[in-house]
Amino acid sequence: MKLLQRTALYQALLALPMIVVGTAIGYGLVRHTVTHELDEALADHAAQLRERMHKTDLFLEITTPDMLVKVAPGTILSEQFSDTVMYDTLAVEDIPWRIGRFPATQADGNAAVLTIGRSQLETDDLVMGIAMSIAAVLVLFSLFTLLLFRWLSSRLWRPFHANLLAMERFRPDSPTPPLAPSNVDEFAGMANALGGMMANMQRDFTAQKRFTEQAAHELRTPLAILRGRLDQLIQNPSLGERDAEVIQGMYTASERMGRTVSDMLTLAKVGDGEFLPQKVDWARMFREEIALLSDLISASKLTVEINEESRCVIQLHPALAQLLASNLLRNAVQHNVPNGTLSLAIARESITVRNIGPALSLAPATLFDRFAKGDPSSTSPGLGLSMVKEIAERNGLRVEYTVADGMHVITVQKG
Image (cartoon, rainbow, N blue to C red; front, side, top):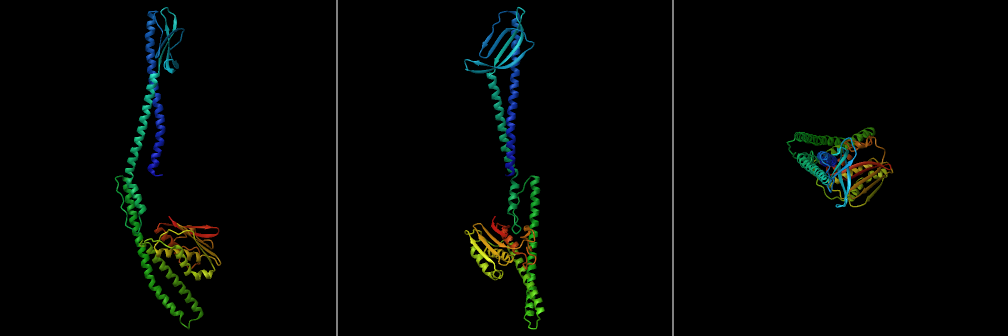
């Protein structure tokens, strides 16, 4: 849930009890005020009637739909007020009344109790109307406050979302996306920090890429000379067996260095982003790579299986697809065991390679790092899987490594 939506939700959850509590408090205050005013009116009316009772015996009791006056012998110490309900034959319903009982003295000097009542039907309607008005005002206030908050928040946070989108689109090998300006100090500071960070990343990326390309190019020439000299030494007929073994080891090391240089150049080119994705016949691609690795597969007596569940829709430039397939298969072959198995599953949105092999000697999280090798004794430069990861990330794919049923599993799928 987005920040604005979560904030609006919290505000709505806060407004709901405020409306209920506010309406209840408003109703109670209005009810108390009306009841207090009604009691004062009953007391004033009782004072007038008691004064008349002192002067004359001609006092008539009154019973009307909204007024009640009764006099009964008896005594009470002080005024008493209460609420009651009386049945109205005209309205055919119970009507709420407010009753006041007051001590009085009749003209003959006898004590009496004066009872005055007044219907609260109209006052109840008035109180309920006022309470509903308060509730409506609170609802409208909360609603308009929520809408105003959302409008202001979306307007104020617009630069933040724009800069967040720019960060998602940012690539060190691409032009820097423009950042949205803002008159909010926090967002302006964030934009300046992001701009500086992206500039530093591009500068570091360019420097690293240039260094990799220059180092690889510079190494190619001495490596070619070294190989030529070693070829000449190997072809020397007077070369002893022990010397031949030493030279052969040097030649193997030079080949390894050559592959490392080639992989470094390939990684640099992958970072250029110059490869446009195309449709790939992955089953045919992997079969061709398996044919190229047939000598290694035969030497280890591996069993290879290809299962194409459906046509894979993952698109890559043919050169990158060949590089991806080659490195996945070469890794599965080199880190297999004699008489082991290698299975390949091609699905609509994923490619999965499984192989038997010894347990990793390094953390799985570092398996795709450059120069990382699961077997330290391997002659591989350790750039194959890092190249797979580089290609995948540059083309919106995801690479995962797991261990299932004693097999190493590497999956490339659409991200």
